[in-house]
Image 1 (cartoon, rainbow, N blue to C red):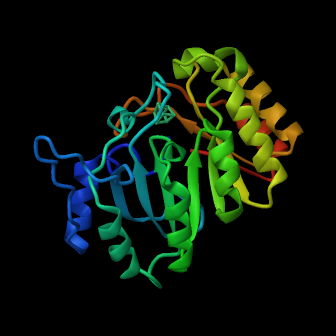
Image 2 (cartoon, helix red, strand yellow; image 1 turned 60 degrees about the vertical axis):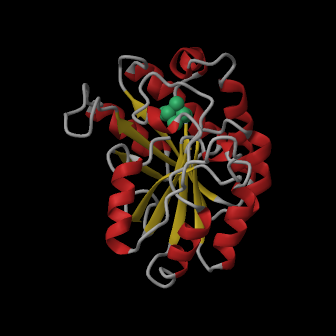
Amino acid sequence: MNAASLPNSAAPDAGRSRLEGAQPIQLIPAPRPGQSAPHEPALAGLVPFSSVDWPGQLAAVLFIGGCPWRCHYCHNPHLQERSSQYRWQAVRDWLHSRRGLLDGVVLSGGEPLSEAALPGMIAELKAMGFKVALHSAGIYPQRLAAVLPDLDWVGFDVKTDADGHDALTGRVRSHWPTGISLEMLLASPCAFECRTTWSPAWLSETRLLALAESLAERGVRHYAVQNYRSSPDVPPDAVLSLSAQSQLAQWFERFEYR
Ligand code: SF4
C-alpha cells in the first residue's frame, strides 16, 4: 500500500519504538523448536498517531504483513511477506486506552485484506467505538465485500492503467480484481478515495489523464495523485504539469496532488 506515513514510520522497528514511548507492547516471542506458533494476525507495524493517512481524521495505523503483489516501486518490501511484530491482544488493549483520543484506526499494509482475521479485528475495533478505514489495492474483491459494510473510509490504490498493470505489480491479470473491487466501492455508501502513485517512468502524463478521466466517468469523486519518490527525503523524479493538475481538478469533486 501507499500509506502517507509510509515508508519510514511503517517499518516495524520504527513503529515499535514510537509505540513503546507511549505504552509497552508485548512482542511475539519466537516459537520454541517443535512448537507450533498460535495464530496471530500478521501485525507487522504500527504508527500510534497519524493525521495524514485518513483525511480529516486522527488515527492509529496498523500495518498488516502480507501482499501477493510485487510492485516494482514498493517502498515496503518487508511488508510483502506475512509477519507479526505485535500481539493483537496487546494492541487491542493499547487501543482501548486511546478511546476518546483517536478518531479511528487505519488498516494498511502490505495488503490488509490478506489477513483472514481482518473481519473479526474490524468488528472488535468498531465495538470499541473506533471508526475504521482500510487501505487496499483491491486484490481480494470477495474479502472486500465482506468487510465493506463495516468500513467508514477506504483509500483505494489505482496502480496504473490496464495496459501497464501486470508489469507494475509483477502479477498476471492483476487488473481484473481491482476493477471488481472498484465497482463494489462505487455501489457502496462507504466514502473512498482513489489514488495513484505516479511517475512518468511507468505512466505518461497522457495515460494518467486518460486513466483519471475513466475513473471520473465511472463515478469516482475523490482522487489523488501521489508523486513517486525513490525515498521520502528526495524530490520526486517528475512533477505533474499545471495543465494536467488543472484538468484533474475539474474532473473530481476533490482532487489532491501530493
Ligand atoms: S500492493 Fe504493491 S506497493 Fe502495496 S504492499 Fe503490495 S507490493 Fe507493495
